[in-house]
Length: 482
Ligand code: NAP
Image (cartoon, rainbow, N blue to C red):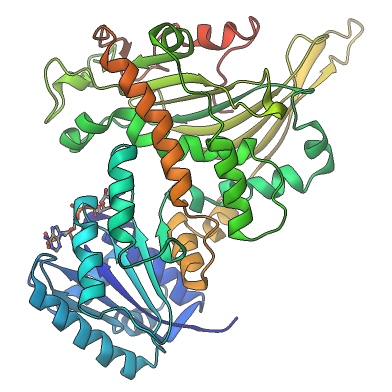
């Protein structure tokens, strides 16, 4: 593979995400030879760090993955730090000079990635200054990577997009949803369209319903002030869950380009049935908030730091989502996500119709904790009674295989460097996702305050959650991980 030449300018270089995810990911790319001597990273934030201090921070953050200390030191020698307050115009001048100098030093041929890893409220001031103060190059490429959330509703997303578009057009904007960097998510289209039996059965004739679960064991931790304004619907449903749903429901892309894949996801997201009224919501959704755990060890959400004592923020949400496309008529998508659930697991279940059998056939794609695939197959007990039993056909990735898979951020940064946008959200996807979540919030605003808390920490959520599925199929229930 051709060694990639580029400068990454990272806004938010002193932050948590940079140290936990970004430096280790970039180091992996360097170790594997995707980036090399023609690479530099300018880290910037307000703290007055020196290059030496910055390099030590980066070294500390990659410590676990270092096998060759001198190679790691060579890697961090490509890192430069420039103190910078994004509101201070003069600093962009210093950034431009440094970028020009490093461009010559590392022969990066004018390729620039701007990675903004700080509060979304600061995105516009940065992009505006990048453009007005000539930090965008006209020799190579200019690409912008931004973290979620993209706005807090449809209107703010539209406003943000208009501001970003003054400096970057849509083809230059790479919106991160780190779930799309997960290897099994990346492989979903190949699983669906690369296996004749699955492709043949992936339709309303054979599928009863889908389930998508993103269960977290953690509570809100120190993020109470953020979470109070977001809840699980904005934190998980608006992005990760709806993205997984789109990948599961989309038609076969006509080719392998990012445009084609994203057009098919947009098609699904633009056909999500919006809830009509409070009755519709009561029938098809459940919201929850965790209380203290039964053993008294974990506090209720309302007792967490920076959370209101009478908070009505939802920490759990489950719903039946209907995709109004002819191929999914009568096939609901059941989704759920919650904090402080019994354990962390992320699963996609494809539940097949089962008129003559006790238990349906089912494909479970398990992202975590036991990453792999599982098919529930019916057979009978090997005795004289021949009682029906279900056995698992399963494939679980080994620890070694998991270690060798690129991490989420490694894959996403790699793809951005190569200009592959398929694992990044297109603006139209974000808009339709917001439209769906905005409707939920609009209806909630006129409904009585929920009776919270309604599930204990360390449980699987509100007790009546199975009823949501049983309206559709009385024999069905939520599946956990295997
Ligand atoms: P963080 O730890 O609070 O870091 C924020 C960064 O912004 C710091 O480097 C801070 O550095 C810098 N900063 C703040 N105001 C600034 C200003 N006026 N000028 C220049 N730099 C400024 O946040 P984070 O957890 O790294 O998250 C960064 C972004 O990623 C956020 O948009 C967040 O929503 C998103 N995100 C984070 C995670 C995660 O796991 N952490 C997950 C998903 C999305 P100084 O104080 O030195 O200026």
